[in-house]
Length: 445
Image (cartoon, rainbow, N blue to C red; front, side, top):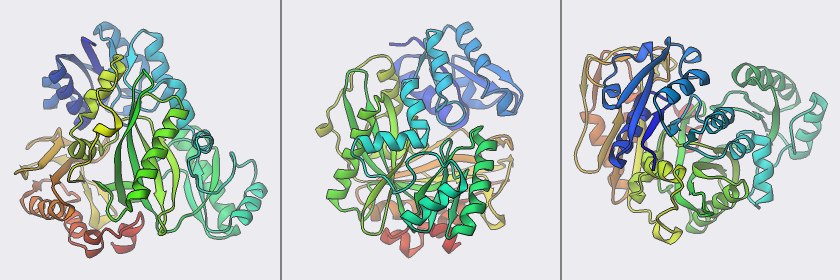
């Protein structure tokens, strides 16, 4: 087992990892930028090192500085959390070349799955359904027009690197396809330094279903059931839940089994998420793998009782999975709400500033994962997420009622937040009925 772990991240996920390490008897080394200096969670680490100015490009994304702290701090492993360098295959390779374990998948598997075209090829080889589309990257505009004519409009232009909706465009005809290709490629180059794009058939009003997996270094791989992440805005998740509502059991089992087949085919190890879209007829299609821990991992923890962060660390240390597939049960219903420092009435404009008042909800089955506190200042430099409110109850109806009650108790003052929108979402009949899709929020509000 590791004695010391460096956490190459900040905020909520850094605190989550610190807590897991403490329970495992592992010391932690935290890193921080000047913008995060003085944050309370840093006091809970055994050591904390400043690695640069506020800009992530000059701190959290600088591999050489993180490796330097890891070496000086005498750590045996690095946990990347999510975001920043979490899916950077080069970072994983550098860590291991310095005899520091990277708590994540092998860099070879990460590189293969991080490229969406390569990931599609692996999925097809594993017999996992994929959305009809181009077999590889689009070589020229005329090639794209030909493929679109074959699979039929509308089509989706997607960047082969990155995610979060960047480098993505929907084209309903040839004119919009030609314009969209150029725009998507330019956006992908700017965001990911990779202009490659490919085409998929656009599935209208799909649901977003993802499967949590764990795989150890001894050939064992399991799924921890699915999460429904269909409540989104511009491809950014707002609400996640498990189990997915109104999902036939045979579809649920099939989609989970496909996820395990895919990660076995990729030679994957550690925690990861296999993401699918689901059409109105319950046909599902693979879209991508997130080769890291997800923001919404608490949903799975609540319904399975398995601590995913601890499992990540134990797998990286060479431990075999302590359970078999048949041991993993999905009990009750868990729902997570992301709370962001954004103004939903003004285009979700960011709202950095000082939290002047904070009153948190509580009670049985309620969890709030966050690093903020009354008096904390939300920085304009990073993601706007304040925290994640998670509820776990015997039934989905109970979970929704509990979340509504929590939202009545929840008070954040001094900044604008997405809590007013959350109240609307949880009171909407379509959400209660489990009939929403990935475009529901934008159509409705």
